[in-house]
Length: 359
Image (tube, rainbow, N blue to C red; front, top):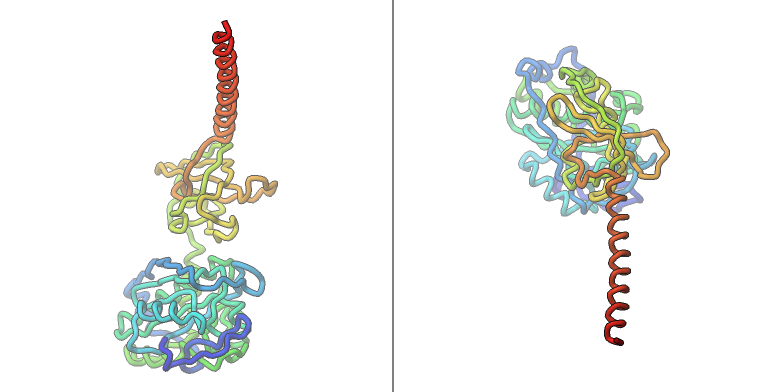
């Protein structure tokens, strides 16, 4: 995203003019050569690289923190840029605009906390949607991989925030949006990306225009696959405990779950915001689970004083300083008793010394 492409002026209260754009058509194809190529080549989406920059502002969505209503797909409209150039530029110019993530043919890089809104489509869309940019790529394989990455990441975000796929292009009501659809139905911008990029690049490398409707089909395919447990479940031994532990600085490398991952078919990732995470924060542990593969899991309460029955499971790598609460209390009491005894002994020694000197 270069300044010559888009000059964004006033930052209206949480509504910045939209970022990037091209054209606005979503006519569906009976068959998509790009989607077919992705399937035939068994292209696997890239893993998410989290590189959160704390310099971005943190403003809540209109319904609150971690409550987006959908996902907006952008495209940079800069044929000579790279994903790292775009990220660096955005950090320098975030007061004008920024998105949550960037995608190209080999990477998905998350740079802003998706629990908070971004400034990419203007008002009112900014307060409603997670937003990510696609960087222009220049080969048949790279374009197919980028579409796979973008569609999978869209499905991942929908799953992360408990949203169902719904194409918003036709009626402006849904969870999957192009920048063009937001501009058309909600206003706040005149941009229409990524449709033009999809159309021209699909035609160039596959002989057929690629469309948002075809992209939406890929999103649904990935989303539906996420609902299917392809992993054989392992057994786990559960034990009730009364412990406490601190959140590790490595917690962002792992996930929060409603059940033990791999040991329960209903295990799903949960947003970290549910436990108000903070490195070093102490949580109460009321149950452990040792999986048959040897890994340990801990069930934590969001608050030590809560009476809620809500609990979340975390892998042992999320926690440090795990100890029994009784042990911690007993150690404290023992230390206090020892200090008291030391004080008495000292007083006794002083009295004895005084008596000796008077004799």
